[in-house]
Length: 350
Image (cartoon, rainbow, N blue to C red; front, side, top):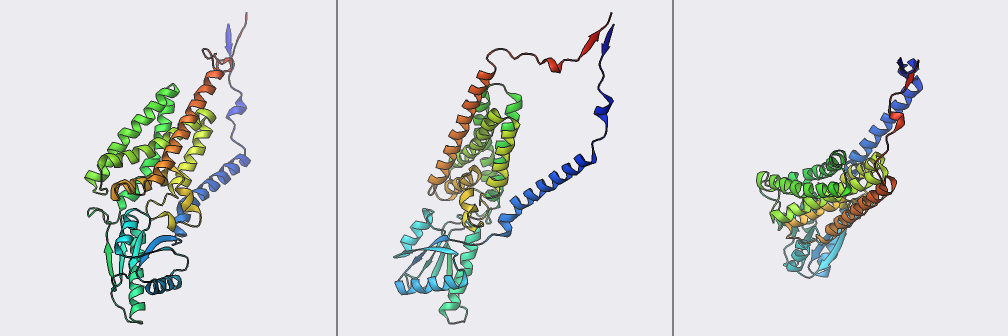
């Protein structure tokens, strides 16, 4: 006769009220962190050290600097150039976001809305302020010229701004699914890279051919998205292989709560609070967004930083995956033993 041991009746007893309180407190902390992560960059948005150029005689440039310091102290990092062509070259090379030009005698403001629609709008306000300063209080229109404009089908850059979240989510979902569906580090890495390529091609096709949000080379844009997705997914796969689901949680929190919210894709890194914009550009979402902006609108100019950051994260993720595979190989050199504790406990009686 065989008797199966049944679970202790105490195991189904209601949880203590103290445990309920702890769960509520934990959830409150989590939702507060989420609010801070997603709302703080937007609430504290402001201009600081935005690079622009000023072209023209020294006297005119000094007047511009004085007006900007009065209206927006600390808002701009000014580079002085000789003429219009030099200013436009800096804009197209993504060295500056725009320029104020006095070299022809008639003031004009040169913008690049493809570099940042928010900063281009701010520079239009600067043009109005300069017109008032030039005419001693009587508003005079100062010409504004956009030399690197966003596509006509998406003049606000909404598609590019919205692409950041799918890139992050795509990398995270790839890591979760591949971890649960595939066995073996090499197969998971191959799957992550293959998905990054196909996902990049699909996302770029939607953004460029359907929404009309991207210009430039389709393959270059797809490569920027694919590299961003691969950097995220490989990093999460590597962290999970070393630390388990705790590693995935840490990586997901960094990519989503820090990287995505501080990416500056929708505005510009210089518009985020304090040091947060610079930090965001060191993480895959921010670097990927800036790389995509360079390939789509600026013929690849200004892509070096984003490309370097993404390749570094890609290599870091690959190293983590190799380390996790080696660690797993040392831990389980042969076939895994059956866990005795997982088998039902029985007692045989005569």
